[in-house]
Image 1 (cartoon, rainbow, N blue to C red):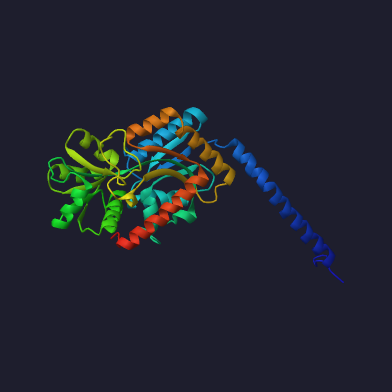
Image 2 (cartoon, rainbow, N blue to C red; image 1 turned 60 degrees about the vertical axis):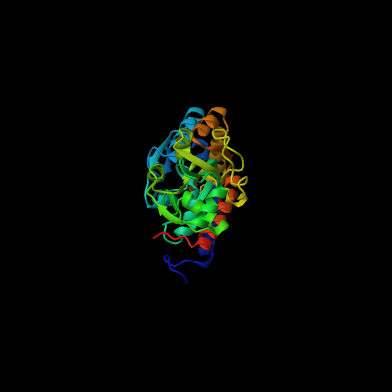
Length: 336
């Protein structure tokens, strides 16, 4: 016999069945709930995190995209700068945010390289903890020397490097210009003394002042100096010549087809963001970056517009992570 406090086997079985049906019902309802949430999304501001200081190219591009989405989609996109830690602080912050579409991350080639340079030490895993939303654009690296230098071409640069010790500046250890320099040295086997600076501007100042032999520079940072005659451009790391500098050869034309480098910028969200929402956001970003006015604005900044949706940008990002992992390991690039 069972007391009133005992659980009769049949009753217990019924309760288990009801519990299972209830859980199943919740599973059925969950997608509807998510769909309803996405339909009303966004009902509050979107936080677009730029892991670099205000005023830089990535920051300016993010703000233009945010404004375009505000005008066209009526989304309230708020750009927040979280610089530091070689762009890892802002990235880690976004990786730990709720996967609800309300937190985005602006990334560059630096993040693809950081996946190897800071493996296990960045506070996040790029490919595990974040998901691609869209690609925006890229800017190349330009190899520049002082306008008074006797080095007038990439062939001259190689000849000079064989004849004497050359100092090569960059915007800092692990930055895209440094990575490009390392790749150049790997491809040519030429030694150069790398001088890392805290940003591109001071390296160019020293180059103009005659304190460096060559600088591997972000194209937008050195463009004005080349145009005003203070610097001479030897090559640009694009597949086609720049409309702004039509006389500057590409690295392929200079005999270095494997030195093509794209310092891209794109947008990621926390892993686990619902696929339908990822696609919706990605489609909207691509739509705005594809507008003629936005393309022209990016070109004026020194970017090449490259609108890519989630799947395409995700594949591209992974290929860049893999490519630079090999370069970094082969060149033994380390961040102290």
